[in-house]
Image (cartoon, rainbow, N blue to C red; front, side, top):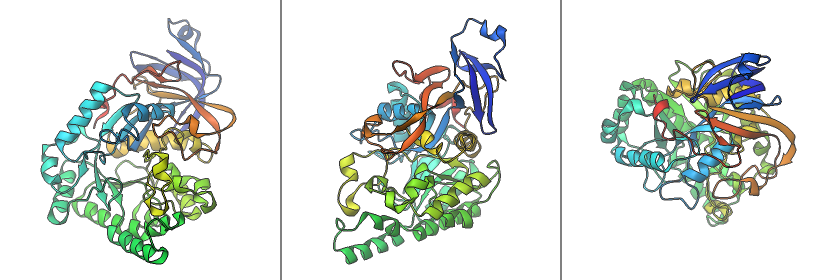
Length: 447
């Protein structure tokens, strides 16, 4: 395959050029016009007409709902949405049914991915609950990018280990250089805020949607993050703070600069970054997520933190629910939104493409030690997406590929489309029919 007349774009920026691959890996690439002898090769050829070609993105935070919640989404529907968004690899969270809290359940998920297939690579994560110390000792740490800890319950109610076991978990992960990804919200603060809201409004159903950010408050985020950071620093454990939503967390816990070598790293999501979603006038229950979206100042601070290196990765926290579950009254509405399909093209309205690529390729590589494509060098996996500027168009729910059949980006005007995605050289998105990923189970990209 030869793609030429393209804008080769990675973390360093964009240059006109070309790239050639075979047998799943890059053979050669270069700036400017493709050499005549390369074009003369017996290869399929694509004139990109100055579209961007980027390394395929890594989304290190998704909920694909399988097993147990397939009525919301499964490996096929949600991985197709990922491929349509230029995402080639995802880390799949453990709060399914049953929850992935044992080595056996983790192996079962990996088996399902391998045997059933998917449209992108899927790396399931094991969650840390009571009994995690025993399960970690059954795990092969080098085959896992990280493990997931819920300091503060979210969808799935996965409580963290406590006391000495929590200390031992951090010590084990430090010993084996295994990062811990943490959902950090303090349950005691959230519960107190929730009780106060019920007392004020009379019932859970009567609490207005705009109270969500005060119930799951910035103080709840700060309290739990402080606990996780203290443990990480005490034991020397690599800690990755998931879905950072506040300027306060950036200021108090994160350090600027290159990701490689940091003990404490962090992720944010498109829903927290987006200037449109940050405006309270634009919020609906579709945007009820945990942690809650905060203020316009927080969104601006998070975008700045991407620029200065204080935030290291972008993960979508893709979490499909049926629209009826989202539109339930008051605080009974489900938390979570399906974001992976339109994350890239929506972020291109307010972030440089090179920064998005950096935070979704170089960032995951440096945080988790995975073998992912970050550039166009000879020998790297041919994991690419082609992103084309198009006439402005309005996103609708009918465009959504997730099983839940809606998107929080409905009504937004976008100016780019992902027109092709390749994984290990195979086109999985953009042809007449999508094709399954040739290596869905992440074996070759593990730490």
